[in-house]
Image (spheres, helix red, strand yellow):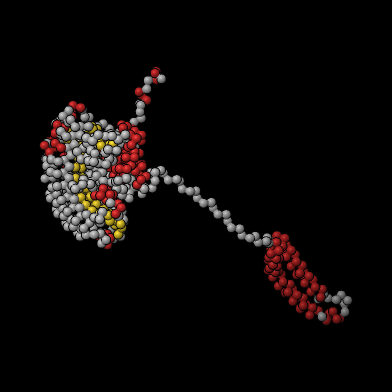
Length: 558
C-alpha cells in the first residue's frame, strides 16, 4: 500500500492515543489531600474500569479502521492520478492477400471460341502432322479407300503457305461440342471424344500424336511413331476414328449435318432444334433421370438425330415416341444398365453411341429390332463379354468399336454374317493396372473373322495379343487396308510375333502399325504388298533419348 498505508496507520494511532490521554487526565485523582478527593475514590475506580474497557475495544477495531482508512485514501489518490481517457483508435486493417497467379496459357482464347481453338489446332496440325493432308485440296499422303471430297488421285495443288488458312477454314466447319478441346486427362469425359466426327476428337488425337498425356515429345513430336499413327485421325476424313457413319444420300455424318444447319437453331427447353427440326441437340445440359422426360416433351415426334451426350443419365430415357430416329448419342453419361427393349421402337436406327458409361452387361437381344444399324460404338465401358448373338440381326452394320472394356475373349460366331463390316476395333481391354493385359491371342477363336469380307480397318492396340496368326486371315482379309496392333509391350513380355504368311493374305494392306511391340519388320516380309505405304515398328519412346549421344562425340576432331 506504500506511503498511503503509512499515513493511515500514523493518523489512526494518534487518534487513539489522544483519546486515551484525555480520559486519563479527566479522572486523575487530586493531590491536595482534601476530603473531597477521597469521597470520590469509588466512582473514580468505576470510571477507570470503564475507560480500560473502552481502550480495549478501540484497540480491537483499530486494525480494521486502519485498513478502511487506507483503502479510502488509496482510492482517492488513484482517482486523482488516473490518466485521461484516450480515444479508441481503430486497428489498422491487414493488407489484402496478393492476387492469384496468372492462368497458365492453354489457348489463344476462351475455349468456347471455336475460331481461336481452330487457330491452336492448326498450329499443331501443320507442324506435328505436317504433310499428312493437303488442307487446300483435301488429298492425303496415305490415301485410303474411304477418302472422299478430293481423295486419292486428285492432283495436290496446295502450297505450304496456303495450308494454315485452309486448315482453319476446314476446322471451322466441324462441330465443336462444348467440352474443352484441350482436355484435362484426369477427367473421364475426354474418353468420350476419342472417336466421333468433331473438332474435339481431332484435337485429342493431335495431342496423342505429340505424346500427350504420358510422354510429351515436345519439338520432336513429328518424328515419333505416334505422329503418323494419330495424325491420320485429325484430317477431314479422320482415318476411321474421328468420324461416324456417313449416310448414303450425301456421304455426310450427323455432326456434319448439324454444323451445316447451325443458322436454323432454336432452343426449346434444354434442347436445340435444327435442320427443319430433324436434329435435337440436348448435350451437356445437366439432364438426369428426373428431368429428361419433361425436356423431351419439346422434341418433335419425327426427330431423326438426337444428341444426349455429356449429361447425367443413369438409364436410357424413354425414346419410344421417336420412331424415325436414325442416330442416338448417349456417350459421356453415367448409364449403368441396359434393358432389352430400350431401342425396340427405334427400328430405323442407324447409329448408336453408348461409349464412356458404366455399363457392365449387354442384353443379348438389345439390337434385335434395329436391323438397319450401321454403327455401334461401345467404347470405355465395363462389360466382360459380348453376347454371341448381339449382332445377329444387324447384317448391314459397318462400324463396331468396343475399345477399353474388360473383354478377355470373343465367342465363336460373334461376327458371323457381318459381310458389310468395314471397321472392327477392340483394343485396350482391362482397367487400371490390368489395362492392355487381359485380352490375349487365346481370346480369338479360329474362324472368328471369316465373314468380314468388307473389313478395311482392324484395330487391337494395347492388348496382350502377342501374335498375329496366319490362320486368322484368309479370303476375307483381301480388302484389309489398316492393321493397328501397336503398344503390345506395355510390360516385360516377349516381342510381338507376326507369323509367316500373314502379309501374303493382306494384298490391299496400306498401313501396318506395330510399334512399341518389340518386333522387327523386314522389307522382304512385305514384298507382296504393293500398296503398303506406312510401316511402323520399333519404339515410340526412343525419341525421348537425348541426341546426339555424348559417346558419339569425337573429342579429337573438336
